[in-house]
Length: 338
Image (cartoon, rainbow, N blue to C red; front, side, top):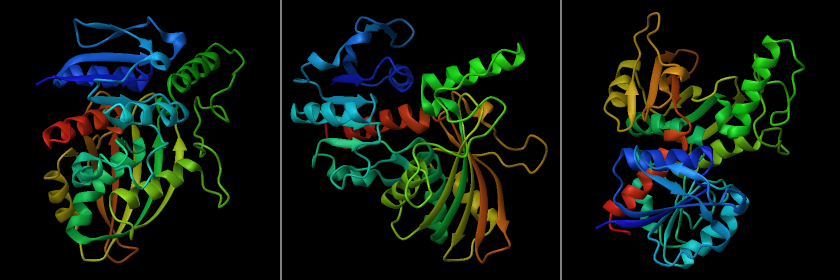
């Protein structure tokens, strides 16, 4: 049986990637509808190698008869239209930040907490976590099962594609301007991003953390274990695609680097590449276009009892957004919720 699927925000970076991944994975859809804002109506979007969809107007679309919605239009738009789609009978897999901490919306990484999908009909909306959270908890899950993580301290190195097409354009334009000695203009980021790093993603909160850092803390607790203490510093770096994370973990029980390496090597969605030599690790440039969460630099931290450090890299547009959403939709079908 095939399903009717609507992709909301189909003309954006993540929406296009969702359609690309659905085609790659031969998603069981008889009909796929691309939805976008009124200004994008008629825009042609590729769906596989030989199919093209024309964007339809989200504001006037009737969700009756739609089985699944993959949504990535921005939080405000999602707040309005995801409930409309759910009320029409669809299950909505939402990639925006709006629904993630709603207690009636499961927050899902299939390799980590697929069982939480049992609550998918409470509100009809399943939330896709923040991109940086997804790759971190995917790497943490097998280690938590092995030795019980008690504390996580992480620093992220997040690519400009996490800020959308405007972020990618700003990095390109600033880099070009510097090479040809033109003025460097900034609009998307608070400071120059070309040849620079910015320890600031999203708005600042009262405790001095940014909202991106807050998201990673609360989402990790919701997905993996509320007892884990989490502290994060999120940094934007001049990389187009691919987020990296330096993750330091403390455990309740003894764990060795070798035991961690074995557990990670056997974990779904994880690829360990850790050779302790020149080029024996994965960088964002190498992970772009790939599905896996790559783990390198696995080593024991002698400064704390039962400590490990990891280097975690993943394509933020794929596993960090579009792929995870499509995987959730596949799980909903496989587990009989659709």
